[in-house]
Image: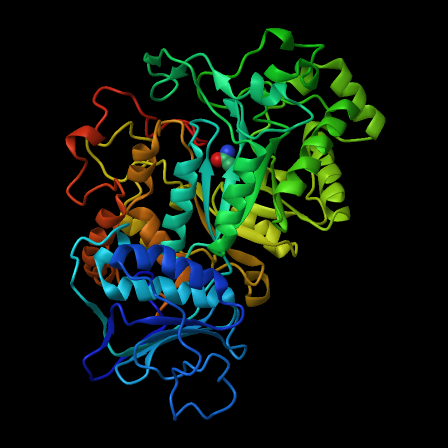
Length: 555
Ligand code: ACM
């Protein structure tokens, strides 16, 4: 099983068959898992999993406490129950030839994670969308699994700006996250190279900002261009669908609108957002190459009001407690050169351009807090002073996260050195568009999100961890699969499974479990990197990646 559960006790017996007679008894609060089991396992095994009849429990069902459905202890029933004595995301899965299968969870989420374990116990065929062995009955072995996650934030960030991922690909990604018990989807929706979400009051954000005429193929020093338009965006109904689909899978979607840097696509759409006294923003277009654009938002009231309008629509679409405002890599060149920006610094009594960036972020910290939400930003938001309510995504190593946690702020650990999955996963000339240093499956597996420098009280501010997929050199879904898998599987275990004493993970054991897991990924149709290296069509011969000694951020 992956991620490894806390404990598994196997017991004697023939196991529990899943067949046409198998019924589903879903107690109050377990509807998401009930629907998911019918949709997913039902389709894979060709079973309808009808509701358990009222009195299926028979004479032994006299305990009174859990007799609502009458299906207690029926050997051919899968029972889903909330057990409030468990922590919310914890579950106990019990499979017994005499009593059937029961998944108890501390909440609907716990039950859902238990169902993910059940799927792994059935076999790789359970990961397909239709039966491949009709007539075969699958059996769940007699066992008890007790499990709970180490972290509450088990995230994946997907950059859909550099390369757009059509909605179906996003829904599939959410399915892949759920299968690995990941529960936060950080949706990087805007950047210099594209604006990907419909904002009704500013239609040019998508009319102009959602596409570019051509795209650099490879690292920015590569001579190659993909000479065709690239673009796409999610309508507000697409976003509602994505958020609802995620919620059915107990995944929170944290949207990111990156400010005040990484904003060239927005400025190309609305030139008045830029520093018009130092650059002709009317001649800007959506960026077609990689790096950090110098075109950043002007520190004007107009820009603040504009983005309040964006965030107002965002809050209507995303129920997430956290809203990500980016804040990374805001080039200060234009603010230094702009008389208007300098006058703003003076007027606000600020020390410098870092403080101006901090002023920007503080404004939205107050704004989001007043609306019952929490601001999260990349660790550059520490520069010039951290906004009081801010949570930090620590990407430039652990340093930002340590500083923030010591100051009493919450942190999500996602250091580039460990969990940036755009980095190449092996040495050698065959890795497609190799980015920076090598991060192998084992490197990711050995990643420890909580730095030893933190006291136990400070460490409690580490909400969890996330892996980040920046897509400059991932031009389509298969390239994203290749970079994400199998390393995201190792990451899922880091995020979910307890750190075994003596605080060292057993990679050989993980690799052995990966053998079974590759069969599941095959059944799911994931274009992972095979252990022996890329398949011929996964290579990109001659396309330059980022040299190992190149600059650290992104490509
Ligand atoms: C980042 O990688 N610029 C957050």
